[in-house]
Length: 403
Image 1 (cartoon, one colour):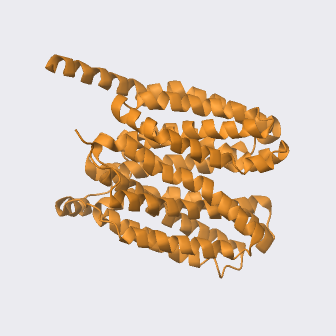
Image 2 (cartoon, rainbow, N blue to C red):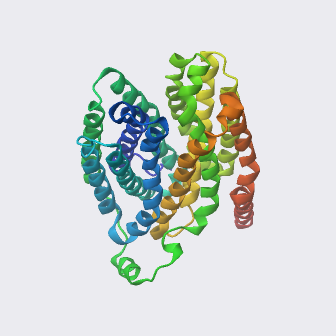
Image 3 (tube, rainbow, N blue to C red):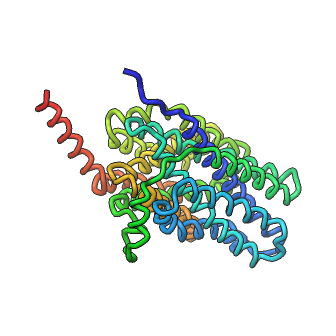
C-alpha cells in the first residue's frame, strides 16, 4: 500500500516561506545589538533589548493571531503578516534613534508572531494525518536550518559589508517569503463557523487551546534551557578559546538533525510520541553536559550534533503533540498557544540566566541547564507521557479484541 504524498507543492511552499521568515529573524537577532551600539552609542543592556523586544511583540500577538485564523482565514492572515513584516523591514532604513529602533522591533515582532502562527497552522492542514509526525518534523527543520544559516549570514554581513546591507538582505528575503505565500492553495474553514465565531462573546478559550497547555508549559521550561545556547554560546566560545569551532556549532546542529529526521518522524507516526520524546529530552540533557565540558573543537561540535538531534526533535514532536487530537478549527489556537509559551521561555531565558553567569560561569550554567533538561523527563511523564501511554495501551487492547 502506497503512502499518502507528503511533499506536495503547498507543503514545500509553506516550509520555504517559514524558512525565509526565520532566516530573517535570526539575521536581525544576532546583528541588531551590535548595530545599535555602533549606530546609537547605547549600553549593552539597551542593545540587547533591541534584539529581545522582538520576541515580546510576538508573544503578545500570538493568542490574537490564533483566534483570528478561524475568522479571517489561514492564507489571508499569512499574507497580511508577511506584508506587514516586509513593510516594517523597510522602516529600519530611516531609523535615527534607539527609541524608534525599539518601537520598530516590537511591531516587527507582531508581524513575525502573526506570520509564524499562520505557517505552523497551514503546515498541519497540508500534511496528511497519517504522516503528521514525519511531516511536522520536516516542517520544523525549516526553523532549525534557519537557525544555522541566519546567524552565519548576519555575522558575515556585519563583518564584511556596510550595516545597511543587513536590511537590504532581509528585505529581499521578506519579498521572496511573501511571493511564496501568495502561490499557496490553503484549505479554509466553512463560512458557517466563521459567522458563529464573530457573534461569540469574549472567552479565554478563544485565545488559548487548553489541551495544548501541558506540552506548551514543558516547552516554556525547555525553551529557557535552549536560550542559554542561542544567547551565550558566542561568549562561551571566546572564554574557552574555541571561536572558530563555535561558528560551525549550529552547522553540526542542523546536519545531524536533518540526518535523523526520516527516522524520528516515522518512529513518531508508527510508535507514538513517547518513543521519540523521552530519548530526545535525554539527548538534549546529555548534549548540554558535553557542551559544559568542551575543551576542544571536536567536543564542542559533538555537543552541537547531540543537541541538534535532541532539542530539534523534541521541539517538532512537542508541536505535533500540541495540534493532535483537537478539532480542526482550533489548530490555529493550539499552534499559537504552543509558540506563545515557547517564545516566552526563549525571551525570558537570556534575561533570567544572565544573573547566574557571574556566579556559575558558563560551564556551570550549561550544567544547570542539563539538570533542567533531565528534570523535564518526569515532568513530561506527568504532563503528557502518562496519558499517551495509557491511550496507546487502550488502542492495542482494542485492536487485539477486534482481531
